[in-house]
Image (tube, rainbow, N blue to C red; front, side, top):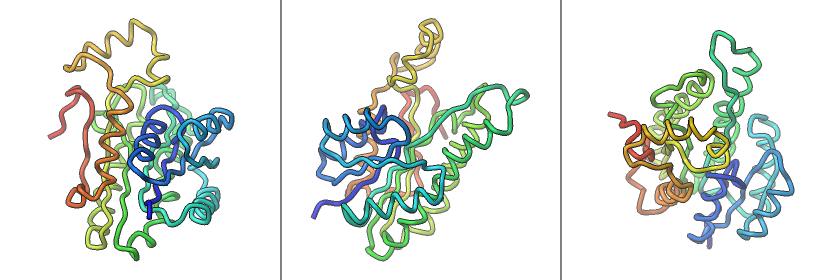
Length: 241
């Protein structure tokens, strides 16, 4: 029987690439999204996956959405916490609202999404939790104190939960992308984008499919001895010790 994978923010950008790869690898894929229903439905048709709308920063919506996925597709074997937002600005000018919104969607969502599925994974003796952090959660980034804090918190969450879950056949890992060629990065002014690429030793932006390939490996049986790890996929822009 095909395993079930749930990907948050799974209908656009990196999330869409992850959904496509997991579908190609034989998973039954549920892709969560928060906003554009028309775009999400187009992705569902294109990839042959199921899509579900809810706010990952809302505990009640997460519980309801996960219950619906389980009822329609079966117990969740793989959870990819990919959804995230940015609300950039220098900290000395940052509003509490911008801080809270990013922490809610990018960090609180880890609890809201993972808590409802972790017990079932432990009971069945198999689970894969894959959290999509960021190079900026590793090294920090000017104008992104809120985002960097949330993405760094994701790494700590992963390390602790990995230790709690290892004996139950559940692995918990992080993928930390660098700058990836998505719509968000494409919106960066050309001059600024050239400066970013100049700091990447590989000499180019990453591809969403390269992040998806790493996620697919971590979701596989072959990755059962890898847990609590942060997999950097950034073209050597930042090398973590």
